[in-house]
Image (cartoon, rainbow, N blue to C red; front, side):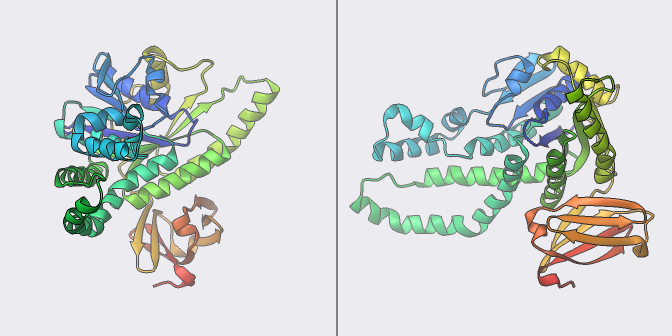
Length: 396
């Protein structure tokens, strides 16, 4: 491995077994001799349950070469953001909140996700570990989490300087007419540090020599569609995806009426997934007959996922679909080597784009940012198909 920390970011719809897959990855990395830490950004905190240990807000050694951590927003606020914590407590006390409730109420919704990102930066800056595995929240929350640095960048460039300037004017007047605690420069300075750190996190997570995302799914229609949207959204934010994981595949010997029909459905969807996510490698894991808890069973899951391979390797480094913002809309760029323009046909229906290349069909589930636009044109450029999405059906 290179000297720089490797970051693996697992995401997927809630209930697909994402935490088990992420934990199995971390266990196998540790077994291969890498100093590995697994970090949960999911407020539900099931990582400790998966590993069979009670985790803390700071990294805990749970096996040789393996540390685990679950973010506690209140702990982070009190330990690392003292000025902000004190101001929020003072403000809540002024509002009449009971002392015992001030701590809980001072944790603003979303701060747990924010602190998760800051912990990623902390571990990357310290370089104490070779591999960081991120067990991310379900897809929707993860996408909001990954968009946070962009939102913070907007605040930095536009609203934050204005807010600081206004407070300098308002603060002296406010102190004469109210006893409400007013934000001071120390609090604003701490907030500025956090915003700067979040912007730096984006640089780390979009560095394709450091970080790749992996999408976990089951062979169910709704889950597959969400996984497709995730791939497009991740492309929009500039995050590289190097694998797709299909979890809980039923074995051929299933003969019970209910599970037999369920397996038949899985077998129907399996080749479709291969086509939908081509050229990404697809890792597969079976449905286990018992709950996967503890490092021994997680190691067995890792065997089925990775065999003798290295989970920390870059499993795919070629071009995947990219979404590029353009004037009046977006350009969706899809690698289609060996295809020619006269072979390609497009059809758009609501939130789906169907691309036909000869007898091969590629169905893409579009995020809202594209579904409300019109696929106005498409052309080939360097072995890739560029699909032009514009408002009112107007191209370039």
